[in-house]
Length: 145
Image (cartoon, rainbow, N blue to C red; front, side, top):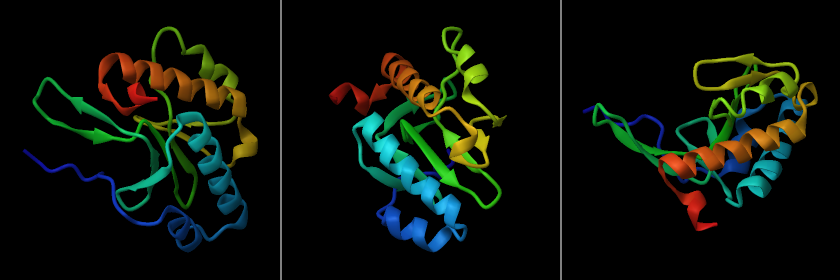
């Protein structure tokens, strides 16, 4: 079975932001996301793979037998856009996408250009719903809160 590419590392999150993000607005938005996601999750930021900043973790196992650990929520300050890993789509929370603001949906993430394009309270609600969903369906560090 293939080894997971995205695992937690010991790279310093702030050093990563300062060295990787070359746009001042994106750097400020990254630091604000770190502050908000730390507050919402109750976890300190940690690097996952080379470019994902994650908060907390959960263990997943697919029916195929593939398993691993992933952050509860997170983001990556990619060159073109932010990738937000904050949303577990359920019937109960699909309406949140309508309230989020300006974004594009990817396969496993939400893409935004800058924080001012989205509703922060809606982002918070998405994160809280994701914690609830992961707590119900996975071995989740959010149970320890």
